Length: 275
Image (tube, rainbow, N blue to C red):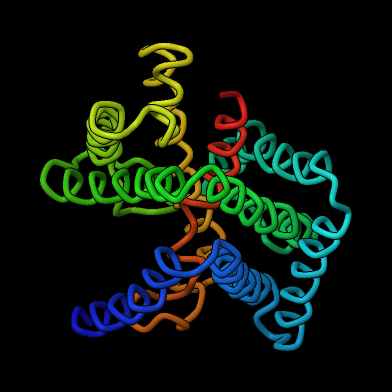
C-alpha cells in the first residue's frame, strides 16, 4: 500500500509541478477544475451509490454552475457563492458534526445534493482567486492545510489519548488537533519572517492587522481544516464506505485528499480580500 501511495503521489507531482511553475495560470485553473469535478463525481456517488449516471450528471451540473458564474463576469456573483460556503461552515457545519452519527443521510440527501453544488464551485473560485494573488500566496495557503494535517497525524500518533470525534473519526485526537495547531503557528511565523509580507496571507495579515489577529486567523483556518476532514468522514460513514472512490490508488478518492481544502480555501480567499 505504501509503495502504491508513493507512486501515485509521484505521478501527481510530475503533473502538478510543471503546471504550477512553467505554464500560464489558466492551466492550474483547469487542473483544479478537473480535480473538483472528480470530487463532485465522488460526492454524488456517496449520495446515490446505486445510480451511476447520477454522478456524471452531478459533475456536469457542477461544471455548468462554474461556467455560468464565469460567463456572468460579475465578481459579486462569485463572491456570493464564496460567502454562502463560508456561512455554511461557520453556522451549519458545527451543528451537523455535533450530531455525530445521528444524522440521517436518507433525510438529508437533498440538502447534501444542493450543498455540494455550493461548496465545490466555491472551492474552485477560491483557489483561482488565491492564484491570482500570486503562486507563493496560493501554495503557502494550501501548504498551511497540509501542515495542520501532518502535525495532527504525528502528534496524535505519539500522544493522542482523548478522542476528538470518536463516532465520526476514531483515529483523530484532541492532542493531535492541538499539535497541528501549534505546528501551523510555527509555519505562519516562518512565512512572516522569511517571505515578503505581501506574498502570503499570514504576512499580509501580520503587517495589516497585527500579530494577534494573524494568530487568530491561523487558529480559524486550522479549526476548519479539521472540520472539513471530519465532515467528509461523517458523510462517508453515513454512506457506508471507507473511501470516496479509488481514483487515486493508495490514497482513496480525490475528495479524500481535498476535504480539508474545501472549507479553508473559501475562508482564506475572503480573508485575503480584506487585505
